[in-house]
Amino acid sequence: MAPCALCPASSPSRAILRRPKTLQPVCKACFFLVFETEIHHAIMGSGQAETGAKGKGKELFRRGERVAIGASGGKDSTVLAHIMTLLNERYDYGLDLCLLSIDEGISGYRDASLDTVKRNAEQYGLPLKILSYHELYGGWTMDRVVGEIGKKGNCTYCGVFRRQALDRGAHLLTVDHVVTGHNADDVAETVLMNVLRGDIARLERCTAITTGADLPPLEEDGLDALPRTIKRSKPFKYTYEKEIVMYAYFKKLDYHSTECIYSPTAYRGHARALVKDLESVRPSAIVDIIYSGEAMAASLKLLGRNAGGIDEAVDKGVTIKQRAVQKTCVRCGSLTSQDLCQACVLLESLNLGVAKIGLEKAPSVVSI
Amino acid sequence: MADSEAASTSHTLQLTVEFGGGMELLFSNIPSHSITIPRFYDPARLSSPAPPTAPTPPTGTPVDIRFLIWWLREYLLVDKARPELFSQGETIRPGILILINSTDWELEGELEYRVQEGDEVVFISTLHGG
Image (cartoon, rainbow over all chains, first blue to last red; front, top):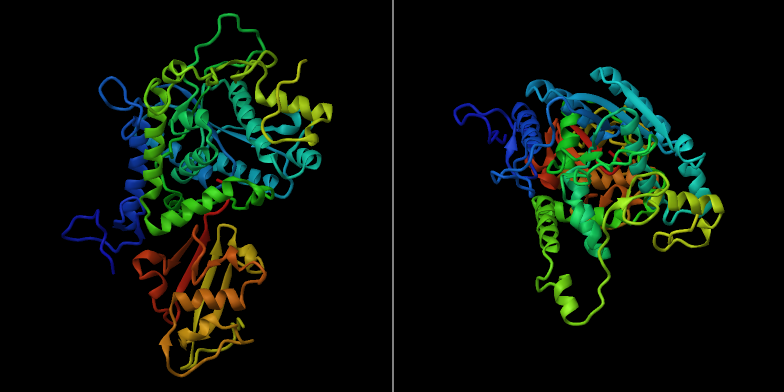
């Protein structure tokens, strides 16, 4: 029997789990406590790359903030709903919580998991809003998108549409902060994907625990324009997927677990396989990759460094493509680096019937 | 094959195997199985093609998780054309967690843990959306 490393040394309980982050054997009670407390610390700002004035990270939330929990009915969002409700009470964050769910219109996958979200809403006493691609995007469910463009590049559509759907849902619920269940494994996979594809712009942003907080609202807001400051946070940024699953298992939290039927062809699958293999050899690899990602993001922000910042390139007479600057979509007002946001561009190409012709990168802007 | 009516003999033992996190789909959509496996095995035979039923030698290496993974792949997994969804080489596919009597297999010796009569081994997949 392995004794729990966190129990008092005089009377340790029997350990039931080996923590991947620290390789410590822990008993059930200590596991629940350390799991919940570490997330509380992440929310309070410790252990983050972004540091505030006192060298400590910024707290994720303000008292009284309305926060929507992006809920899919899967393991991460179910545990997230549970944890946010628990911590909000235990540490008196004073947050106004609700659940927000997006129906992409993938039959056999999303319909079943939405039932789980409805149960979660009841169990935690949270209001629930469900938005569908069907109503948001003129009938373009993912099933229909795949029917149009096939199974390569469909994840791009889904991801772009979902992000905007979350923004719109947040707007309808009058929240200015959305939290999602992205865990440490997800962030590590994203870092690896962005490195493998040389996507510097995304690499800069993907390790931030909160995104979207930096753009100020425009003065000339139309009534239908989306607010530009919907923040998105990942309280589980440093939480291992293994621990999330074990927490749900031992707490008997009910969640839905099926793979999206289109996921076998996704690029992320390769990154995930690599991360999982690395974890089995050296479990700390996951947080180590996140740390590397944070370090890379920090170094990318410093122009003029030897790694090829813009000033150095200009000195050498090299034309360098300006990295994208964030502005707002002329059609729907969402955050974008082009004139039209990606969702509007993709919708445009679907509606014109040109989407199936080719999708290597994001389609170039179609003039309206 | 899985035979829940056969009593344990000195050459076999019974245990419960459970599948969660979507893995039950690989095993006829049944989450809980009561199975009877040999008590001993010959490790050298794991790399050869599996016979129609697992041999039950009276002596040999006591069965362990390494054997159990092989046994489940050869005799309980429905889609034998895609073993990589369950195992990777002789070990479990990374991303599938194993609990032995509600304890992390990493605390019980992983592949080396010797399966006992009446054990409950749970396989939970983490390889799906959250």
